[in-house]
Image (tube, rainbow, N blue to C red; front, side, top):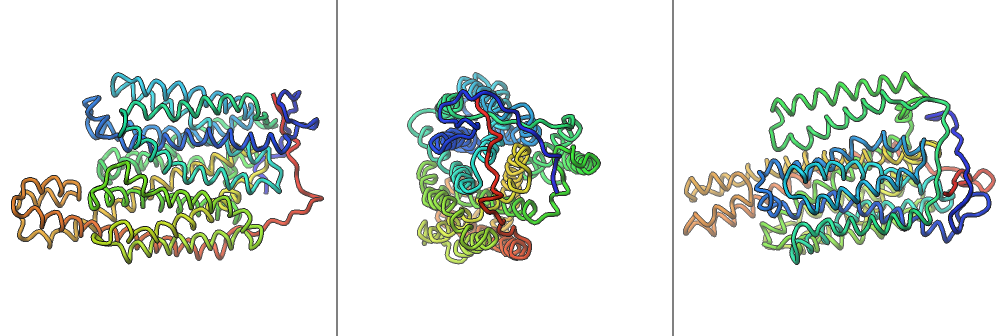
Length: 536
């Protein structure tokens, strides 16, 4: 089943060093292309999580409420997720290289404006446009790989891209925390601006252009309904924990998101081959299995981070920089495993590779749930974190390749955007679900431990572990008891969240084992070469 009639890709005179006479980049240029798109991707990924480490500084600088600070952080993700599919499709039609260059320019200018923002309003606008630029960049980086690299090299290239996408967020948080510690929050934007400058230079010199020539008009209705659907649903996941799941704004967002999603599916089924995204493809195991796996993996990863940072800071008393550094072993193993996954998939098949990774990820969650303790500290978490890093790296690369291989070459911008939207939804779901389980478990556990603590500090402590540590200053001789109760209750809440993650990974394991992507059959005679790539 194809999502479109076979598109034709225009050929233009080569103007890039290293491109062969047929318009196919040689091995040296392919390495340069991979470096260029991964640097562009790193700029986007680092900006997703970078501002999280500077929330108190932003509140002081702008005199802003916590709600405003959360919007400064979340509006970037919201605009990024909402625009991925339409902008990925536009890049397919009008040229991936021009879209990447335009996205880098918009993202770079918006990041510079954020660094110089004199008010919260200017910062909100800058972050909004940063998200727009990121939505132009992110799907194109993967689409360039899938439309440029030959089949025999594509898995390894996707593995590198996946490692950057998975581990880059942790590296970005570490660098951001270091910058906040040694300078000010405004220096957080130096890294993405520097990465944009490097990526722009390398893209202009080395990245070829490719685009689809379609016999169908652009699916404007599908694009608009997808924007409304994604905006509504992401808004609910971001604002539900803050406003309340039954608040009018939350319920309105949910209704709008569900109605728009239904309209999108109905319209795309009607458009069939002319659709922005042929939703019939979700009946095939590659696209469905890859999408579900990425949704769950990124949900679990984001949810674990929500749990880890308070543990490091509130239970262990670490700084933001040290807390982020503690995640680096997991990030390094994740990136290494992402690079090894294509070789393993070639030996045992993508489904076996994915299930192995899922099993390791679930085992890591189980280890963290079973042996975490206040007294055990970081070493009680490290084995589980290492297992999770390896497992997620092994799972993410074949999942990404399953999605991109399900759509034809001329629709790789849409395939890449779908991959990215899935990641964003998974992240939002994981934060909402595991964060809620952590909070619920903490509040259930701390009540019985506060029987001897005065009512005022006890009521404050029930709100969260950070509140409990602050309330300990007014607890007098009960301060030590209050702190210990909060830390142990947090660990109880942690275990609730981790065991829920284990159950989710178990369900995913059986789903992928039964319906995961199969090993593609490919011989040198039928291997498609990327002759549809041209350079400016």
